[in-house]
Image (cartoon, rainbow, N blue to C red):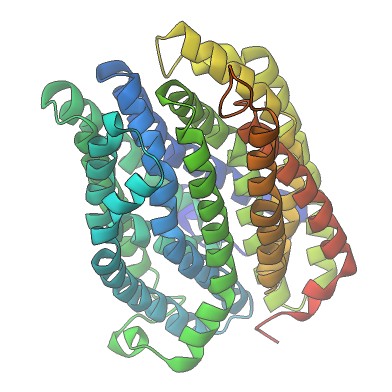
Length: 458
């Protein structure tokens, strides 16, 4: 049984919804485990250090996400290429894709460290980060940057495994890393008293462990591809395709992270309590989003394999069934948040006022998860088919042209003597508006069907 779960999955046969669910469940558990990284960080920091330290971790989050966008792009491109070549049984192209992904990631890690390290503190100052948490934010980001290779390689290698239909191995290794992260968090913060730096170090060590396990797994799958010096040597065709497919996904995440950084500057103006409330919301939001991201990734692999095999009708059928499943899951999560949101907020802090503020703001977002389910599912199909540009443009419109102006607009229009920066709800309202418009745009462009002509494996 374990061997079967550990093996690559052929998603070109069987009932589409069964293939999607079987792939999504390990993905969902894995995404929940990955979210535990940040959540455990926040819980430990909030209880052992205090609310200001919780705010520091939250303020560092958007910048850390920006540092990761390059690897998210490489991972997305590799996932699409691997799934299509695996579905087409093209061993040579599959081998070059995997080898070149590993090499490009190493080059990107080195370049990022050299460029970003001197800029971290100046960027935090530019974003109006409160002086009381500035040093903590800097320490957290510097340690995360130095350990970026572990985070990068887990994303890339787990994406390759999922592209071949193996979502179980990535889950297994992530669970191991999550347990390690929890143990190290408590040890470094509660016993060694390293503070926020200890939380960052624990996460880095755990993610390095998960990336090593993924690499070991890949070296044992030689029946599907070759991995040698020749395959590791950059090959123009494959690097170009990797960049072509991954760049839009990376830019999408970069756009999203940029919007978060711009909005973070507005968030910081509301003070440490509001920053901490947003950290709590983001942690709960991370779990609420997991089914959406899991179905989106599953449908990317599903579409990639079936497009590679030339089964277009099966892709369309899977898109309908997968989207319905995602919407059903998000509807359940919305109900849970409405009735149990306050106890969930209480996990992260003992401060009653912070719990009440976080819950009030979270209620604004709750219904929006259903809209995100539609966006993630249909975008996953389009990406898997090779159309990564359309989701990128939709993200550009909703996050830059919509979310940022709405947030700052509401803030400006609601300013009073008592509220010099406007109403705090502007952050959550702008996010909800962008989610709903994004879903409508995604349905429109998916229905046009141009994504069906973008396959790289003809």
